[in-house]
Length: 103
Image (tube, rainbow, N blue to C red):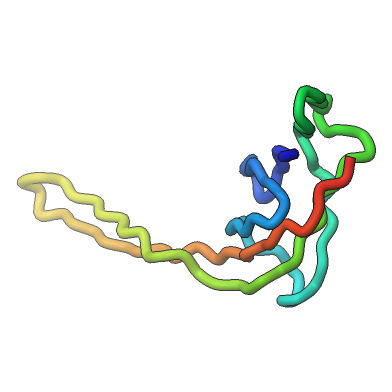
């Protein structure tokens, strides 16, 4: 059984017991969350697709930790114009452990 959820403007395919990194969620580590934006639910041959979400379906997850991803370098340069600009960005994330998928 797996589900496709929406979190932080992105879609994630999740199965029970999996850990994944999503956009920062305001929750304490160890806290349990219920994600209600379930876009698709698959249980064997039974496929339920939401319009836009599946009614009554939830995904239960536990917050493992918060952190920051690796640095992404942004370099802008114009050749022969003596122009070069550098910047970096580290995005915050929340690591979730999927503890249950409820249909």
